[in-house]
Length: 192
Image (cartoon, rainbow, N blue to C red; front, side, top):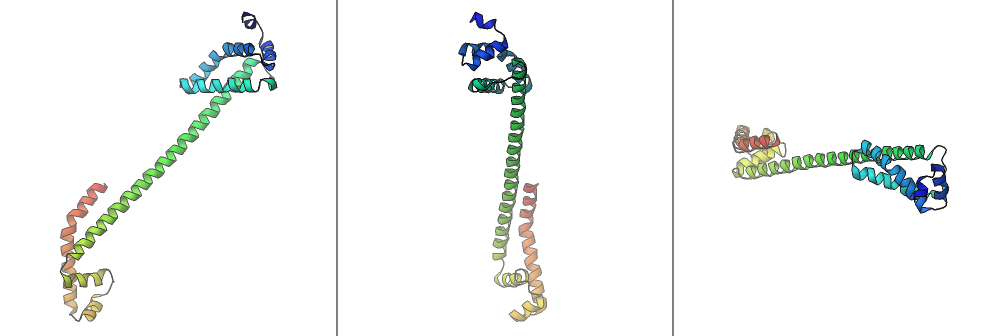
């Protein structure tokens, strides 16, 4: 072991290419501390820094027979850890954007769903109040509002005077305004 500590980086890499575990351990012991600190300073996460460091040394061991350095081992390792940090940060940013877009979609869906629920509730209440109108008033009101007939057409269809139709529609609107006024106010308060 002490012998390996005196070897140069090139000698350690040569031994590593021959699958020498002790040479690999010496490279790890020599460079893992500074590489970890560099990764930690960029990521501010012990787990992420350690994961990146372990991945780098795992790749080195798995590719040991093919390793070719055009620079020093130190420069290679520093470049490799820096590239992994950049890749990790980019991946994390991409994940955050994806999560944000999903959350925004969910929020929009919740708002739309909430709006539709309120709209359906209000429609049901309006229908209930229309059903509670006196029968003749209800019939005239529905012909006016749902069938969109004019007062003259309703009068002709029901054989009643046009002013009677007008009075019945106005009375229905007054009743509905009073009964629905409080509810519409409450819906407004809940909505905003």
